Image (cartoon, rainbow, N blue to C red; front, side):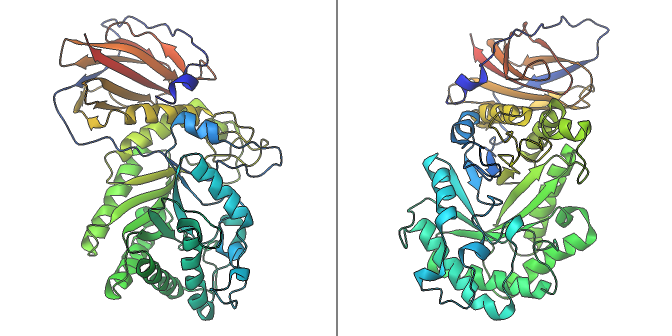
Length: 454
């Protein structure tokens, strides 16, 4: 697999303890003959791999490839892919090539496609360039959105022939920064409807959705009412919503499963039961503008990597079809507590190392049933099987203390071959030896193991 050569940059044997009868043991029992569906390769990120921010920041194409990134959402690639920059004059004829400035956006889009990543196309504005169209400007703006997609999908105006499948209209219209006053909710609904209908007419095969709602959509009464109002408007006006997209920032893995299932239920009750469920931003949560040791731990250290892995495992039960970590690259080396899973200079944070283990277990698509004993608090696990019978196991220990783990595979012919560990014991992924079925995971750690039949 493409990511293994990076994973073992530093090989360190982690001492595995014998488990005594007095130890608290989390037992994980795996049925290799069973099936609970498939492990979804939820391996998307926001932004990158082209550099952003500081002028000396590197391109991260190789790093993204090494950890197994599959798709990139073109959001908050600063000074690119914002309609307010691509099509700044809303009175200019959208059919006129001179109305558009694709230069910076082309360079960053090329980095996505040349790297082999699927582009997930957000049409709207990034954080630094928000300027929604007025009601009088919406007609031209929506026409320009169609032409922009032609440029990036069909090669219009010396553009790109690409494999865009999804177009997401806007980002966080329920947040005043992205839909500021005096713009109203009804104005946004009209903009989405007008744009979605035009895009679907021009590209019937595209899946069109949005609008990238904040986590209030799943956590507050007002947010849930917004979702239902949005879907009711689209249903009443026969507007395509091939997927509904939303965001969450939380340190509680249960929030991810609960949120995804809620979105599924709202889609179903609103007449969009066949629509996909997309989580287009997620990460751990820190207090805004707080840059302390706790914030660093949650965004760059092993606590963040263990928690985010538990959240990723939780997403496997959530009904989510696509998911994108926010974000891939940091803009400045002076703010390592920022959202990126890579530092601005290209070094992987612990979250990027953990991502590589998500990619590893995603190669074992047939999901297997798991049973755990009562000592599972803070431990999250996922297992899958390849067609050749090999098993991959992903475990996250979100506890602040070491956790003894026993893995029982209900077939004595299986033997665990190796383990790959992300923890505070090393700055890179460690290869570890597994002593029969027993392993002691350090505090806040992530472990991937492979088991083969003898």
